[in-house]
Length: 219
Image 1: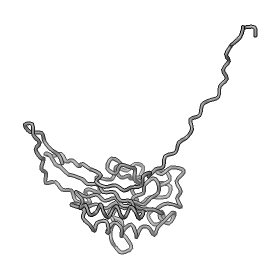
Image 2: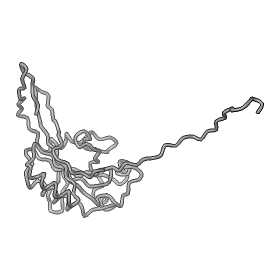
Image 3: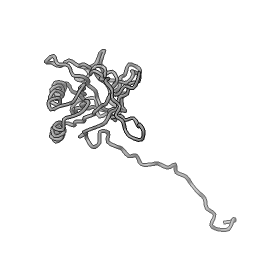
């Protein structure tokens, strides 16, 4: 929520601007570079590679966004114009269950093309140590809404105990004059403790030989 300081007190800034889901979707995707589209890292707090948006499922439903993280996990991102209430996670899980059928190279056979992500694009994004065969063997859900019913958080706790990570991100739109603003905040997060495991390399020092004269010069 945004406040204006007025005569030493806080005055709520009211705005009637409410972006629709498709409009919000456009804001969350960064400008493509070399035909590669990423989700906004500032919003999602991690790099996510956009696979497709408005993805049609086998039962003719449409998922808002399908992405991949650097560990190769499939990420279903569901957007809501208003409040996220109990049931929205079920919708996202339906999409997740549908997409989970495609793993490894089959994932890229299904979702490459235009729009889509090729295997080479993912390897460039994830690094040389990425294992294509493990792509989408694990999946998770990110929900984006104006606010969330706390019952969703209880469901998120239970899902995380079953191995499905859930993150809830709230957003607030504000328009002041002709300028429009969006703020984002993580309300709930049960992502894996280490999405990207840290590796430590031992520091190496160049070998050297040092002479110290501890006797008389002639010795």
